[in-house]
Image (cartoon, rainbow, N blue to C red; front, side, top):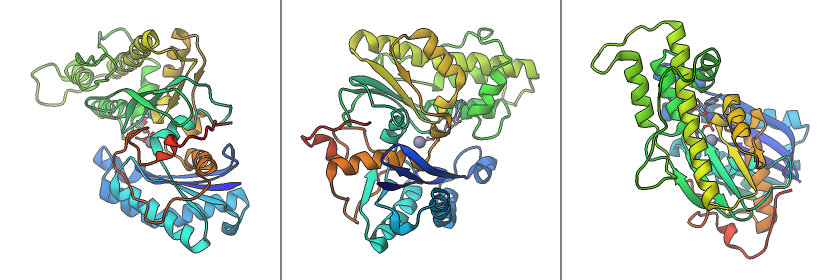
Length: 352
Ligand code: KG4
Ligand code: ZN
């Protein structure tokens, strides 16, 4: 079964063809980073306009690379949230138009759930497990008792982890999105020179907080009372990047340690742009002996393959498409309250 996956929830226009939920025949990503660079973050209106311009070109390229025609598509899966509403609507409308004109089933996919699916694509998923989505817009820890079931354990009370990498990168004079550039700088820095501490939230030991850490970085650069930007030398930048990165991932490590005291899980799955970070992967493998699954590096950032892959399983479970009045959702929780209520159906299903 060929599934076309469409993803436009933020600043990537992406389309992919995936066979039977796991064989990636094409995975085309048009990144808008050049458009948003000068604003230091995603400019929502420009993001939506750019999706409109390139969406069908990206889909055409995905079909060409997969060497199939649009008539051969069996299902059209589209990320209908969470994300930027204008961007979501562009992808959703494009997907609906194709589904209607080709008379193919349409499947709405939660893009956060798809980030976790990206790490499950290559092998049968293990349950019960814990999932971590670490991205530019989300920082979520979720307990997964079985396939498609999620119980949120913790999330961020302020910045998302990727957002904190981007903001710290900007303080260090790096272009958006600066997560990968911070990682690169950190490679030649001393991770223990600055005693930055992972954020803690009193009320919930599983909640994340990154704004205090970001302020500590600001003070390390400018001092506490200086209003103007201070120029710092390259070595100081490297040491700050390394110390920040260590503290940011210490908070993930701490949450996992606490979670393992409470939840009995057989594996941990990671997903989202920040999981491209090799230092994160190394730290996790050094500290935990249970099976850890990360997506292939080209499946960490927003992409159509994870949407098509998960869309395949949702379609197998539902055996029908969504209605063409499917809505877009800027915010949707994983699991019970999700509009994707297939997880409440009785029939079991597992990825594989
Ligand atoms: O998953 P994603 O494409 O976007 C959302 O769905 O939000 O993730 C993008 C985020 C950006 O904040 C980017 O700086 C961060 O992932 N990122 C990284 C790395 N690569 C991307 N952060 C840290 N280290 C990296 N190597
Ligand atoms: Zn994402």
